[in-house]
Length: 211
Image (cartoon, rainbow, N blue to C red):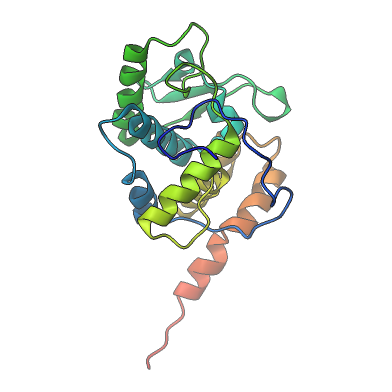
């Protein structure tokens, strides 16, 4: 099993829960901060982990898309992340807000000092090898336990949370569709109806009751 301090090249074993469907659990901003806070701000491992968590949370990328990124695919100056091979092998560019920049920049700077081989992924081991989704899932689960969070914290959960926040902020559906990389608005509508029933929540909040 991969240690939380080292998400290096790790094939690992196939989880016993492979194929099992879990309920969607949205994280609050404070819960995301609590998970990220478990990552050291001084070690290479911690800086990398925190950067990856922030990227997933602030872009909604699929874990496979995030782990396939190269440094050239991120332009923090204009706030753009280019996904060369998204689902269906589609290229798209997503946005990332300035608040994420310090965390991404910290890892990019530390990564340069490690001098990984040419062509290494942005989020690589300290030896420049690819990371795996299984190792990342184990790491997030460990960080969540340390943070005292009872919810299931996993890579796709940050995508759910990103979509939920965009919906609740009133971001237009076509923009959410493009950010998430869905092929159609119908897919996005179904996705959001499942995880972010904004109309239901807002309607119920307008009800009044005095105990």
